[in-house]
Image (cartoon, rainbow, N blue to C red; front, top):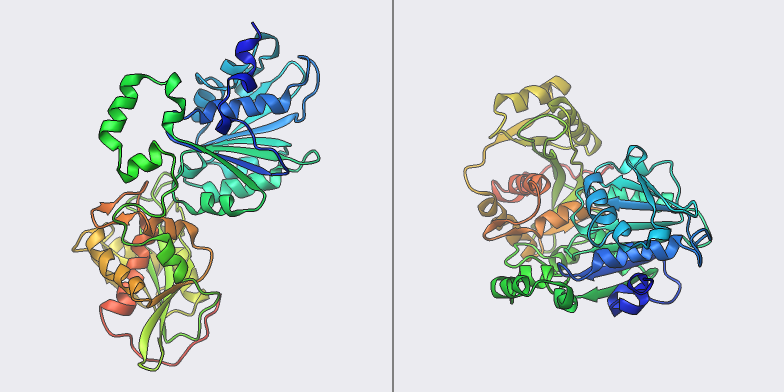
Amino acid sequence: MALPFLFEFWAMDHQLPPEGDWRSWVILGGRGAGKTRAGAEWVRAQVEGDRPLDAGRASRVALVGETIDQVREVMIFGDSGILACSPPDRRPQWEAGRKRLTWPNGAQAHAFSAHDPEGLRGPQFDAAWVDELAKWKRAQDTWDMLQFALRLGDAPRVCVTTTPRPVAILRDLMALPSTVITHAPTEANRANLAASFLAEVRARYAGTALGRQELDGVMLDATEGALWTHAMVESARVSDAPMLDRIVVAVDPPVTGHAGSDECGIVVAGVVQAGARGDWRAYVLEDASVTAASPAKWAEAAVEAYHRHRADRIVAEVNQGGDLVEAVIRQIDAQVPLRKVRASKGKEARAEPVAALYEQGRVHHLRGFGTLEDQLCAMTSRGWEGRGSPDRLDALVWALTDLMIDAAPLRGNPRVRTV
């Protein structure tokens, strides 16, 4: 009866936590590689003692998924979730109203959604299991709040189970000296997968970039055919910008104006003549994008960025909003200089000449633009291959098009960048 619940006996190497003094354990794996089972068993190992009522190493655990539904259906009630892995005498009870599991020894695990980072403000934990971090829309905000909450016990730890995607939050986490990593392809768990599933996905995706990511569990440096790569953007990184001749704030407004809308892309960039030949160089100064519940809120954010950077004008796409875009900006500041632009070509066609500027080394980034840079690296010559809408990318393209492509930059008095 006990043997099925002795995970150390059945586990594959990548499902067992590495030894040593670490804070974060990242389990990278292809689809079906056994990541969820590894995370559930790790939680069990943290909260269970030698006997059902004995205390374990941890007593307060955070379970964080993309949504509460996914925490419940995958991490808790799933086929490889916590309840399925627990023997009857140690099985925790789920309290739906309080979104928590309680074990016979009193240990508790609380469910959180990555859509609500503020939900992690206040609680405190000595362990956490994070699932599919690389696909969270608000990954950085949620991860930051979780780090502040992991403050109980002698050495709070977090287990991260995720399919690898080339996003900033995962790259940064994996680069930390306090992080350990295990990895496995889908094939590693073939004994527990349908043979027809393996045959089908091999036939369709073997040798493709999607197959390398989703089946081999490999972190790709860039999307296949991407106009930008992370290496390209990293080579453009600078710690500060010089005095600039022109600065613009570019705005890509969302189609609708409610809490479920896409983000409003707001990017600030400027140009300066540099080098012996006087070539124009662009500097991306700020990603001021917002998720706006109303047009007035994104317009206010854009105007604030305009004044904060002492910009020359706001450049706003008006394909979706027409005169409304100008009207809401004028409500905030009637005097702000505004250039209205319309998209007559597809996103990839507009992005290609801007990507060429990066290849020529003529665009530089300040630090802290992870989400924007992830969007750049998901834009390919075939079109957008990321999640949601590339609003930040669109705003950047409008800014650099205005500064570097539509017309030669206008010389003016050099200005000090202000943040």
